[in-house]
Image (tube, rainbow over all chains, first blue to last red; front, side, top):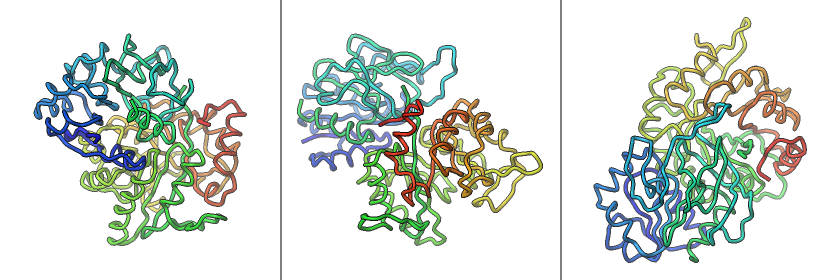
Length: 195
Length: 250
């Protein structure tokens, strides 16, 4: 059974719909015992980092998540919360990935923020991307991003390189939304379920 | 590199797609879910569904439709039409919409943008602006272009950014439906704003879309009839844009 972590932050439904489309069984829960026993754990999320982190803490999930041993996938804010800290709301995060989350900044040319739309991923190095090539387009919508680090398993360039995906041990995270990324995104979700 | 987006727009009335859709080989041409799925499979980058229902039942049907779209469609979709409160936006978010557009209600009550953005995030709010050139000035209109307001386009566009809109969808009511192309100079001015701009209204050819994405520096182009009448199928459009060195997702 796959557990989608429910911590009252936005659009759990789109992740649930994506799992339903690929015929995966799942439950939506904030129950620590259920999360601990699940085969896979998803940590989705949209919204603002400090309030999302507060909601994890209220449910005691900040202590639980780093101790999980099955494959865990954070998506968007879910991935950012698995990093060291975030500039958004000056938030201390779970510290699973050795990356700081910073606001997207342009170089000389001002960037459009948020970074919205389909962008390419490169330097793919994880079974999460099996079957996908360098330059695959995936869907993003975000204003903050994790810096590149030694846990970076895919990168994207938007006014500078950032971590499109992170992986360390059983923990994975994607800044893009696989649940909204058409067939390429579906492949990533299927790959995660096979890990 | 971030791709320029191509966005088909579907007008929905009482739960059905309207605007003489003319497809061969699509079983249920009136079904917005089937049509959206077809566009997504063809390479549309996002979809926009606008509710133009006149009745309360129609609006209820639309919310149910949004839930069905969210179950089926695996790309982002935006919904709009008559959103007048945070509760309206929240109901559509709960049904599975990725973004909402606010238009006339925001002109009447600009704080609506702040309220939706602070509750659900800027990425959820697309400010839709319709305007008409009058005596050399772009004046904002509401109610599908029927009512003229005192607002000037660029001032209002700046204000919606300040209030937290995450994207701006601009339609020139002078160009909408003409198929003569988009007003590229106006879009190039809007492109100075710090949020992505979606160009709408006036597309009749590949060249028009290419122009608004390059000369007009728009981040996305939205169109309806050229797709609905299958005049320019999405795969053809993308191939042509790619050939013109425009970065699109193939």
